[in-house]
Length: 269
Ligand code: ADP
Image 1 (cartoon, rainbow, N blue to C red):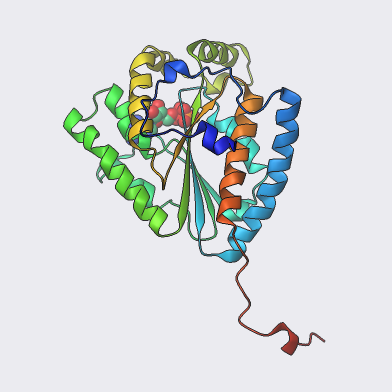
Image 2: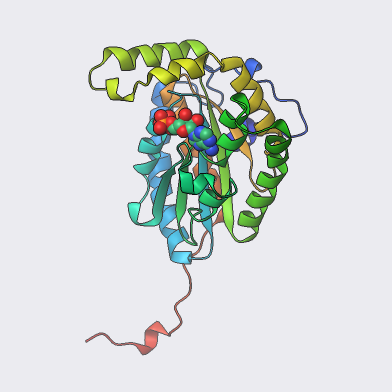
């Protein structure tokens, strides 16, 4: 079975993140197998992105969400090894600026959606507006709860205009987060990544899991599926994400656009 089928969130079934083991590695047996698979995926990704760009008709949007220290940055670093930066835009979504906050929540997202031929990667996304915003009561429930439909409609619009959307939730355990935050604290090279505020967020772990379960279930659609990636093991996470991206691009099967001239009629002297 394709990994994308195996890890995809089925909107008809109740999703329980507590029953997804973050150390599990479905479909990939060993670290060595994962690393070999990752190399193959990256080589294939390079070819497929070339064709996507050459076709110039459709685009690919990869959305990454996770708890702090969940591995979004590491995943992007690995994926990027198979991507030509000329056809790729990575956008990180932070606390909205004053200008962003003065608009509807999708305003800052729409204009960085990938253009035809390109790959867009979102490091966090519009889902923060049903996650952190919900956990911290930043807007009333009546407002965030209607956003699921608004997000589905927005993503449908992108899909209709040629954007393939893949959304990954990197699922780490609370224990693994503690270990990673401790490593950041202990390692002078990583210490800049540690934010005391991460500890405050950690206290809301259960509320975040509830919010993620809702968002993943309500917004895993045929046109923009969510995938839950067990992510305590980096080797599994990287290999699984790359494989699902390749599977999607292979399914898109991009073809370089035809020349609007007859090559036989041209002589290069
Ligand atoms: P990261 O953790 O992604 O490496 P930061 O440490 O700068 O980067 O965290 C970005 C912060 O911005 C996160 O705490 C996230 O919850 C917050 N954020 C992102 N989007 C929103 C939003 N729409 N409303 C409130 N906070 C947001």
